[in-house]
Image 1 (cartoon, rainbow, N blue to C red):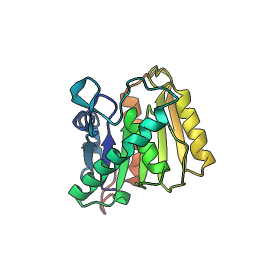
Image 2: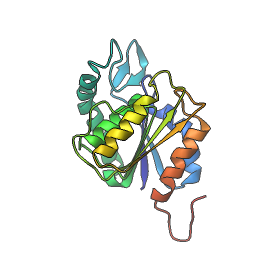
Image 3: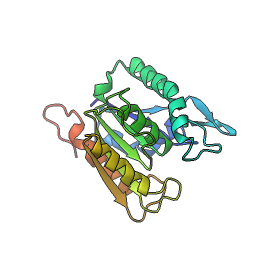
Image 4: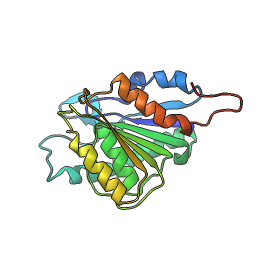
Length: 203
């Protein structure tokens, strides 16, 4: 793995997520953190971004919103890969909230196959259409009142039913947020996937 693509949540930016996870640059020198910017301005606020609109969103139309976002997600990923000269297999993906949803959708619908993926505080909106070799880690706070934790359990069950290698870790005292414990758990999952030059070890 040579780079980590970061998919921010609704109302965030790629730059913000890079700053939040910047500790990883010291953990894995030489691994690039690439904060992707969602193609659409946030509802009512042009300064932040969104992968899809949340206006009047519900269980009945969420799948259509995800489907409508696919072209923008795919173009954003392809542009990032082209700019870095990397193949998708040389990357791991980390998504938070809405970013986690588009990460899971891109992989389980067969559009991309990164080496590993972490979905934090998200949900699997559309059941998998294909099985990929990507290892997937689901992280979720049990006090999440934005995307309730049962969504993570449902995603894990669906992934297993469709043959994915995946793991779910929940955090009893965590809400809809990226805490130090969540970030550390994500890093431990990625540790063995980082290509380490000869003579070096990861901390």
